[in-house]
Image (cartoon, rainbow, N blue to C red; front, top):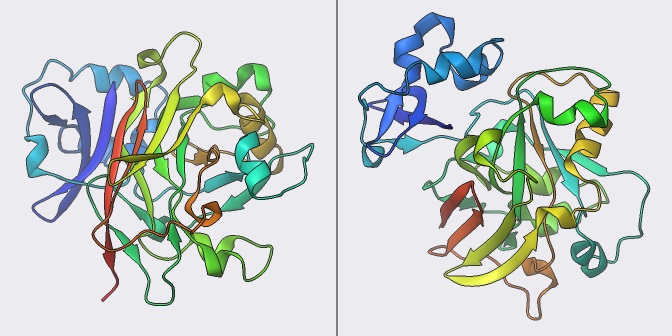
Length: 283
């Protein structure tokens, strides 16, 4: 299944993507599950969503404004330096544990919605990544059980305001300007992925490939990340873990490749889709 959050006519909802359009699950399920995050909290959420799969589409995709897959996640835990090429280009020492930082929901944009270059900086950078969304919550989840706690995956652009990120060794300020990250287009359930769950990732700026990798090149694989994060905090349905970016980021190019108003950034992940965001200057 592919599930997306969207807005239409000033109303936010979510639905099941089909070849004909989008089946509005938010409208059909009502108070039982008014948002995708609340749907994921139900023990039978997949069966409930699939029970509407044969319904006629309620909306044409072109009529919708996509929202971030989970518009208001309780937690967005991001992993730094999780591909060797990126660790080397940033001159970070190897570590025994993942580097974790957090984003605020205000920083997210849906696919097809422009990223916002803030007034305070011209150093907006791209970071194509795979995001996982928690379905079954838990604390101290074992690596062997991790995939059973994942509802699905999506594309993510961990947009970074580099000069603010580098004010100190704490990444927070550069990762949380409003509208600087892309998340979408849809939540893709695990049954849509290859059996080995190895995916290819590519980031493009104005059609030019700037990042390329496979998810089996992660230093800390997905089960390790779920186990690690759930050790120090309880994960709940709808929480997001963003798994790290490959090498090729703009800040490490010569000269640096900063995103400019009018640019188009695409993050494509095999079996998942294409996250597409333009870039605009903050008014």
